[in-house]
Image 1 (tube, rainbow, N blue to C red):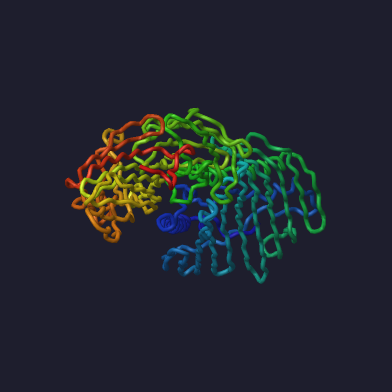
Image 2: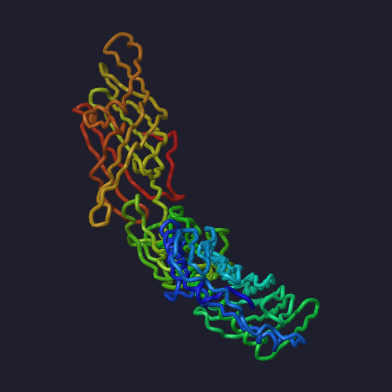
Length: 599
């Protein structure tokens, strides 16, 4: 095969490699995917590929024509070097009284693809040389392209399909004595790759389907008297199974075919075919282990990825903060690992379960699959604590065929729904009435104000004394009762008080005077119960929260009763009041007051 003098051209490799390394380093700093390509310190960048000598092909394809037995050297002349090679390429020129030569270099890195690993790591270069001396002129090209691509994340089944390619070429055109000889050699190795991932999120093996093609063509009879014109192509195909480190676990019997023009001979299984197939597998193994190794590292370190860039996530049923659990009671929580891209469940294992705020989940390790999610039995503590941060449990480790989940996956029970039972009896000492007011108000927890709720307040007032010359009050009806805020206070993780703010609505009663003598005066509308209830607490009213503060609860935590509060006042010597409040967890047995209750 006719080529420029490779030793002279290779003298430029250190400069080519230096610029290529700078380009790759620049991409590593500006792109999220780091390069897997580790350039060797050796200046021979084409090290992964060798070029068999022409006699090798004589053994594949017997021919009456003798193959070239020598490579004519188009020497690059000695002399001062001028020009530059910069990022992306450039050119340099040598000249002397013997002649001149020009060397042009191109560098290439492949475009980034966020869905894959390795796609920005492809590396290519080309060298184009032209030379002329007193008797010979011509030029040559040689170069290489490397590419290996695998998806950033495995599929739910644990499959990672990719491809890899390495192509190298050498060509020359030499003119001497009016005769031109053109020679070209292209060698390429391509493969479809398929990695298999275990439930531990580790690469088990890589299956490769490799095709190696070596093509050599010669045209013209300038310097070679017995050159065979035309193209000779050797194709080797083989399947192999690699371990994660690129070692060959299995390799099928290779199939080779040799063609020259229209003549094809296939099924060659001699030592040369096996050698070519093994070389192709070795090259693909070198590329695949780099790309798959980087991808495996990424899907096993989800905490290092940007939010949403991990490969899998943990899905809870019921979702976090939606299931209420009574103190000391339990419920089942299902969990499965799903792919981020398609939300498909996969096979894996969950472990490193951690209690949170007194909540406990078991077992400590459990498997999960698409048809059988993991099931944890969650047990709530006896004291549910701060409703703003209810009990739950962490799943800190989860591995699957599609990758590893992030740590600190928290499931929490819902903030418990509560019910406030309100019962108040007021007996007037100036206006003679006996009033009974009752309300059952469901409470929900909000982040802004804590527990809030609203319900009806039923009241009924009857005269407490019938005598001449006194004011008696009576009436019945419904008004509103609001809990405008509620912030439980804790000490050592336990609630020690419930700071509720309440605001009863106005009641509507009738006051009348029993006559000392003569006809009675007309009745007068009045707010007996609400007026006396409010007058005692008027100075404590919180205008910002629009309610009266109720503190100093007695913590009970027995059954569904959380706390009670009893208030006794004299309404500034206008009445005798006894009001009892009970705070319960919501249950279907919570009684609702009727609208016809009496004192």
